Length: 392
Image (cartoon, rainbow, N blue to C red; front, side, top):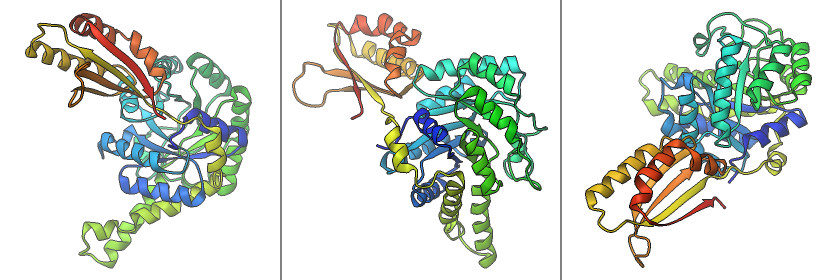
């Protein structure tokens, strides 16, 4: 089960001065290409979905595919929500399988960025999930992703970065030191002295957005100065698009499958190239050894309903529980069922999946859980048995 704690993964990269690719994807074809490329490079990776891309796909099925793929991969992998826009986005990302999240309030004034990011940290940390914040602003240049980041670049101040991390308690910080979203125009000028100063002040893994288009020596310079995560999308999207255009030129009557035939390999080749430039190639084994596995928890409650509880009352209670308990942060699935065979000691039960062991305590004390448990469930289920099972 190589799905790993993203804190451990990025701390290992930060300590050993290499960067993990956070490869943004929009479908399972890109997912497969990313995994193939990382396996060829022997590199750890982060499977990333950006909320700014959700207008193009439903994140639920795509994240389910990421979770399934990560669990059967030999590589240490994490799953990340990129550019989350709200607390609701953070909560939903965790529920869908992300074990790392980003709240992007970098376009707002410093105080408001701190307030929103701190709220995201409180929510996510209660679920055991690390948080990336952003300070400064990485603008767009040209290309598919540039329009999502209008305006001018704002460089990250080391003084503000130190204050921001102290006030928000983020685990990772995305900084602006000269990269741009989309395609670079001309030769990028990176403020490496600024980056080194931020790294000395903070001592936590740093993140670069707009990671496409740098030279190999620039990626090495970033990693040497504290960058442990590099977001990478435009080069993957461009590589995929080139294969589609080439197929269409070769055969203007080509069907969909022919047009998409070479996309997976194009994404794999670009991913492998990026992993090697980031210094992550060959690091999978040592990173896996340094990382705690990411384990979900099943909260199981078996019960006998009180005497006289009729079917309509029971159905109403179950429906309320499904609705309300699913709203608790860190809850990924709410299941209620009947025993199908065997002794009838415990005829009914709940199985509630938590994102991690940290959710056990947060769930127990959450107002939505307490309201349902004390107001509806316990009065109707006087005899109960509960336990929490961690994946093993």
